[in-house]
Length: 434
Image 1 (cartoon, rainbow, N blue to C red):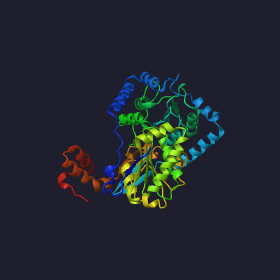
Image 2: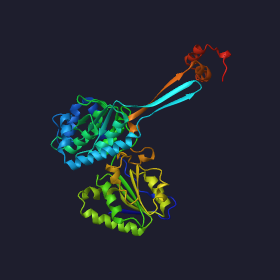
Image 3: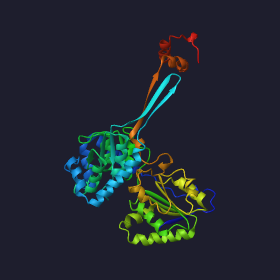
Image 4: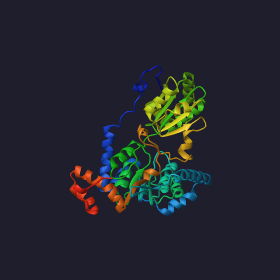
């Protein structure tokens, strides 16, 4: 079920790591065709692809605001309480990272810099296979904390052309301004370019399948898209002989149930622990509600990796750069202190990644496909742009301006140099430098 890779004693363990298959060129071409069609045809193309992929076209793309508000009352009170509790936790975490202003003074210059929120943010929320109200909270609330004026959510409609009440309720809890019943690459393109029904946004965030992730890459530059590739889910569990086998096993199943394109790895230096976890995986899979999805993930990218110890385990983790990393060993710091690349780290046997998926606070929109090497969790910074203003006094210009004029001379930009000299009334042969 889980392929074993024995790296013990290997001088170059990373050289033997299984690598994910590259995205097929045909998939890239198919997504490009969708994006181009939506850009050219607007709503008509969105309708065509929605009918093809989702099986139903809603009567209107935008869900009525009254329906969004009413959904909050329609759902089970206990679920509503859970959504509100999660929202409070997520908002609390991101509010303490809200945009800031800094002032720097030097030689008669004053530089004020600040984080300016974008005007409109588009949040993609997966659907179809399941409802993901948590993703509404994990994308919209950081945007609201950043100060974004308008937050729009796109979510695929169900077979009846409607968006699930629990997803709409989450939108109401998060203070979302607009909800659209559209999904897939066509929704990403609609948010990027705008259509007759959807106003273009400035930033697009949120996880999705490979088509959605590719679409975001294709529209990047037209709109802001975080550097992370937020694609199919990934989990790496590091275990030793003290790790409860059932806990490690269920956490491998947790991320694998998202679908067949993900990644689920167990890394250990204890072969008996590997045997125990694998046996527990097989036992738990029998009763898993989504066992076909889990089995498909394991068959495609499910591995048990045997290493020499904690240092080697960390080396393998860094080579994978996983979305979720759970370190469930007797001395987790021996691994964690060496980890440089991971979307989110969960320390100890009592900290399942599920906490991060729903209620811990940081966004569960995390980098996948090794993009944790250079990016991290979705946050306030993804919804703001740095801006600054510079103010110079006459004394400040006199102090540093000659350096600017000299550099402009070196670049052959006479007007640049004269913009300094006309103000200071200094001639080249009279110049002095501080």
